[in-house]
Picture 1: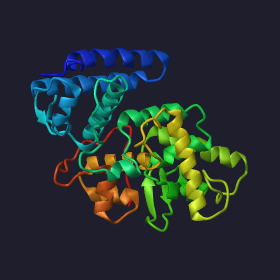
Picture 2 (picture 1 turned 30 degrees about the vertical axis):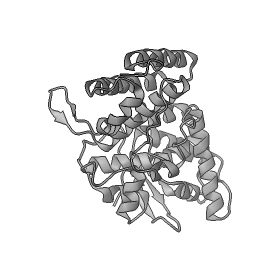
Picture 3 (picture 1 turned 90 degrees about the vertical axis):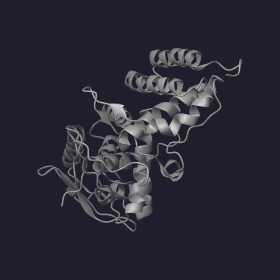
Length: 316
């Protein structure tokens, strides 16, 4: 039986729902986030009840099973969750437990990827809801450096790449970006993956052109200096973007999170971890799998249809 002092799952669900509705009303939570996360958490709580759990703390026993639980399509066909679905489930449930701990309804702290703490130390991938929030949050000044830095990161550029991108590296004709790489990453050409990224980079390039700047000037970091200082400038721009989107409250969201979302999508489209590695600029498949939180022995590589509005990839 549940502890009498701790609300059962139904009561906890109702209390947290009220809190989240208040957060939406006050602007502390985006309606889009609330709608998607709450739908996921309703399914999680139903899953927990079906497995005999009566409190949120007890539900931690089935957390990992929930992340990997098969779901059904509209036709009723069973579908194994892809990597991005597991990430989205994890983010939603972790948000639920943050609120529960704040309200004294639970003590458990679900990890982002059970058994893998490295991804949270260096920055987990964004999920699709967070990526859209980020685009919206920085979209009011599309020609400035912060949105342009976001567009580069969502194209697959890391902070080291972003700090070194020059105006001439963005080819608006064929829709590509040349990334020069660095001491730890390889040079590569990546596609501008979507309409928002293209429009944002186009406006930034045109703005720099109106200033009559040389094509060799930095697109984001407009100063000479060491590779480390340019990388720091790029990281500052991405940190400012995540703060605007309200994503810094989650300590796992870091500048690397944007590039890692791009790599996650690249992996899911092909089912080949080498495609994620190529986008990240590394030859190490282990490094790439750790970056996107893919566990070789847990989640099989399954190909997913390309996202019509967002397709990050290396152009060979």
